[in-house]
Every structure is written in structure tokens, then in C-alpha cells.
Image (cartoon, rainbow, N blue to C red):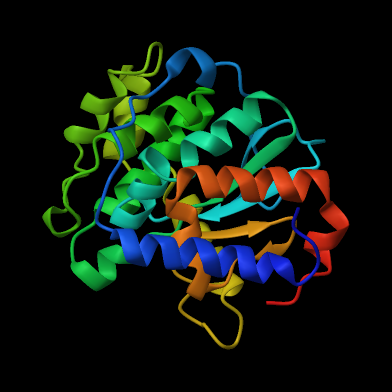
Length: 245
């Protein structure tokens, strides 16, 4: 049972286990689960940048900041806490919110992050964000390759039933949602506050308005312990809200 300040102990313990076992170790590759993905409602938030997935009345809210080119985001989504979060979404006691920055284009070079964020917004327009989000991370190119191209993104859309169409392809090629891409990057930078004007880093998770600190970021990559954390927050929300990291 986790209480009060023991949240910090739990997070620290998870990080220590990962350091001892080696963060480079990976579980079996995650395959997109389209059947369950189709069951999850998705919508664009009133702010115009937040994409919400799951029951909006769920008691546990996980807000994620993810750049599509970020390899650590891929690790979270495929072998880390992402699949466990999906289960909580399906059980309707958790919801997810996504803010999608594209800063890696400027840091690494290219335009793949911006193109991928634009394509994800186009997928949302077709009510296929969840499925396409899974496909992008399951097929993420190497960060340095800038592989999310005008050809590759529609090709990946072909893996999602009902997404690939001339309208989707045109939205990708024309960067139809360029304004969304720009606004999402600004929302990410704003989330970093005065101390982190370039943004908090990716992936970053804010659970019930409390951000998991950078020093405990390894928790996102450990599937079972991330699931335990979500369960504990669901069981004892007041203790999580009163925790000081």
C-alpha cells in the first residue's frame, strides 16, 4: 500500500530496478491492437491542441507530451507503460490526453515530426487517431533518418482500415493541419513554464494534474510498475494529489 510521501519511494525504487537491470533491455515488440482501439472515443479538445482518448469522466487523467520522432516515446508506447494505459482506457477508469510537439525537426534536422503530427491530426478527422498513433510508433524510423515522409505516412495509413483515402493523402502532402502543428508545439513549450521554455521533454506524463518529474521518467518505461502506479492513483487519488516530489 502506497501512502503520502511513499509515492516518491515507489518511483525511486522503480528507477533503481531499471538502472540495475539495464534500461536498454526491451520486452517483446508490441503489435497494434486495432480491435480494441476502435472502441475508444477520441476528440479534439476545446483548446484546439489537446487530443483526448477514452471516457472524459474517467477518474484518472494521463496527459502525455510526445514528439512522433522521439525514440523514448516509441519505447513508452510499444514496450513501456503505453499498453498498460490502453487497458485502463478500455476499462474506462482512465483517459488519455495527447499534446504533440515537433521540436525534434529543429534539433535533429528534417520535417518528419511536423509531417507526422499533421498526419495524426488528419487521422483524428477520420476518427482513426488511436489506430494510426499505434501504427506510427510501431513503425517509427530511426530518429536521425527523418523517415516520416509524404510517401511513408500514407503507406502506414494503409494499415488502418478506413483511413487511407485521396482525402487523407492530400491532407498529408499539403500539410493541411499546419496551424495545428504550430499550435501544438507552442502548447508544449508553454507546459515547460519559465524553467523549461523549450518544453518539458518527451515523453512527459502529467497524471491528475501532477507531473512525473524527469528524475523518475524511467517509470514510464517499466510496464508493470507504471500499471501499479495508475492503479494506486485510482484507488487513493487524494494521496497522489497531496504528494510532493
